[in-house]
Amino acid sequence: MDINWPLMENNITKDDLDVLIDFLKGMPVLTQSGNVSAYEEEWSSWLGVRYSVFVNSGSSANFITMAVLQELVGPGEVIVPPLAWVSDIASVLHAGFTPVFVDINPRTLSMDNDQVISKINPRTKAVFLTHVQGFNGLSDRLLHFLKEKNIPFIEDVCEAHGATFKGTKLGTFGLISNFSYYFAHHMSTVEGGMICTNDETVYQKCRMWRSHGMAREMTNPAMKQKIVEENPDLNPDFIFSSPGFNMRNTEIGAVIGRNQLKRLDRNNEKRRRNFELFLKNLDPSKYRTDFALEGSCNYAFNLILKNADRELCNRVMEALRESRVEFRRGSAGGGNQLRQPYLKGIIPKKEYEKYPQVEHIHFYGFYIGNYPDLPEEKTLALCRILNSL
Ligand SMILES: Cc1ncc(COP(=O)(O)O)c(C=O)c1O
Image (cartoon, rainbow, N blue to C red; front, side, top):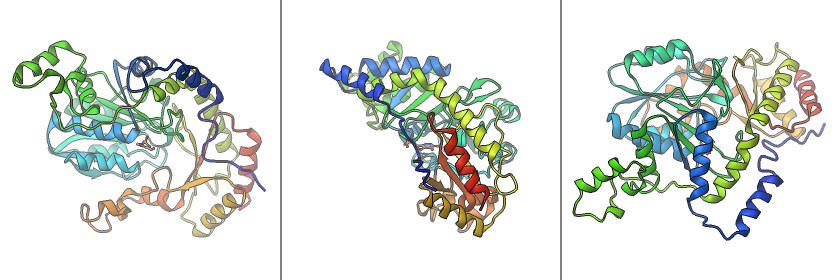
């Protein structure tokens, strides 16, 4: 049966493009300007944080976050999951931290909170948790522990816009949180990302790191003045106070983002209903359906085999291809990062074997697109096919 179901559809709409075209007709400034600031303010108020910094990708958000954290806390260990995106670990390495890995909780796909706590030691500089595939990865126990030990907590919310823990949006619990607006996510600015925080120093530093490390990017006059006075031999417009990047976004991205944000909550509600329908109709003897759904908001259907059954797995992939249902094996990031060549020589050989829950996702976990206007009939047809295998 031909279902014809791409990974993402209609995530940038005709309305977004009409708004963009109207904007362009005014011959506006296209580099970072008023729309970027307005989008940052609107995003902050949607999320419930004081500050946001719009960048050119979720990965850039990760890289700036880790660079700023390093400036604040110095070298040491950062606890990360092996099921995430490459930049969650690459950013830790580039900032000179040592990644320490923790297996996932099969019901949330995020790091097992008890195992995170057990890995914390005097060298731990931060916990960098990814809320995988729209699931909430937090517990009171973890948050209390980190607060008590005064360990910075960083959230990667690139896959979980609008998801909540106890009614409060993910991305408001950590010192810093990161979002992605890549096309396949809950909303899109084509490419794009956001760094969010309530901490003024972090905010000012992120602004500088985004723009070559330049002091003039700071919006706090007293902080800016201090750096100017410390460097009397430099032109105040060209003080590079950190070895920064150029990871700015543009007015074009911001115009699309501002228009998209207006419908994000409405779309997320539809995504929640889609995923519930999928799980309700899936055969629980073959596939996992017992995810922790409270507060979750997924841009994807998680299709995870209950058992490590190679034969069923092959039949699933064949059926998906035959029905033209696009999928990703190993969830969004390609499965177990510890198997990837970029970590060779950095972690011990066969380290990946120590993370059996991530290993299961690597070989027997898939993600399929979940978009707002996905017809119910497609979901039901897919469930019928999967259940018959
Ligand atoms: C958890 C996570 N973090 C970071 C990123 C990177 O975002 P981007 O693709 O915008 O660089 C992604 C993937 O897209 C992701 O899934």
